[in-house]
Length: 312
Image (cartoon, rainbow, N blue to C red; front, side):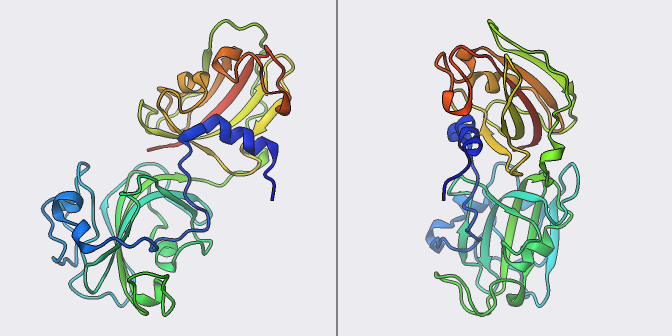
């Protein structure tokens, strides 16, 4: 199956900064032995074999690798604990959630999966059946930046059909989930195509104009920015890429060399909710040869209209 050219180009903009998870994956498919899940590497002062029915926030600091300590009582129904609240709009069904997580068997405390060791957050559409029901139900209302513990009975986990690995049929599960971003769904009509933009030809440097000032988390060096964008040819203002059309924002690692130089410059300092117009000479965009396959000739300036949807 061939992806549309616009999506291929959008992926090139993000380069190695794109951190989307496998859209066909679900939590609980990577086995980690208990010997790897030591308190010093995963949970600070919390021993793997301890239990807690109500999580102690002191066990979950920003500098620690959180594990889900097993509940003392195996859950018969879904129990949601907000260890640390976040900011922004509460998650609703249909939103894209970007999260990191650690999961354990609720009966034994054995760690069976964690995204933290992989270094790649997991993303999924909330409430669409792409994850276990305990996640679809338990993460409704979560905000970006929150840390949530879910104690999930077996019938809201994998039931009698767990994935290959160490899970057993009927296992209740516990997860600690760090919510990195909550991204609302969009359609093509949500793209800010009505923003007045001056044509550009012969730009000597990248310029940035903030059309809408955001009030959320700030895009800083080393963070990952979740961005919708229009990529526009500078001289005739033809739209070459529109990520709103596919409802597929870019996840851009904000380090030099991980995205176009002009995009890197233009996004630094923006906050969630910001809309910026970034005008780039060829040297800060696709280079002097342009990208003829997408309709960008040699020597053409590039204009990017970017909306920051999340930062983590």
